Image (tube, rainbow, N blue to C red; front, side):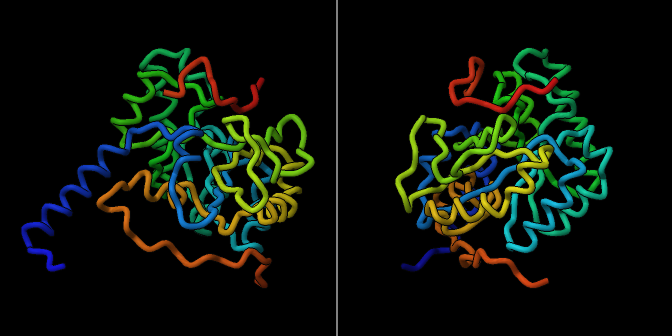
Length: 267
């Protein structure tokens, strides 16, 4: 079909407008699970870092050739700036997890802005361009959404919570989704919540990868890649995905109350 120049220009503008309009959306467990895709994608996300255990995690991810998404606390990014720079240099995605990990839905507008904008500035100074915000505990309100919109960011939750802060699960392939369901063998996909502040989690990454592959994960991607179609809707949807990587070590408003479950409480 021949596309006339005027129509092509219109198509570009529609892409720009729809993409911009989608930036402030809330991506909760339902949106993640309902995202259409041609293969079982899995996105590993790690919250609350960076920590002294994060370099070990980066080493393991590098061995497997797996990109991850890190939702960072601003205060920790200030403490470990070189780890943040390494994340970016190795192709991982970095998102905003506030500065001190508060329940945003309990804060007024000014405090929420301070938590999110201060962290945004820190991450940008370190070379990141964060467009994803994960509110601590998955809690947010209309004020949070408004701030995210002004920052040009999306609120990103998760579809599968490892609860690694409590104990490591017997099988990561049998995690319950935010809908309370377990994926049938060979169908596992989604955005997984972990914490790189726990040494036990970092040490268990090889088993995480093995279990998720056995459960059906065909390719590990960043959150933005997982949500490529959702955050960049039609008519911009028909874009080819990257080739599936081989997952073997390489030689060198969800509003309060929170219906989807959530992160652990920090002291």
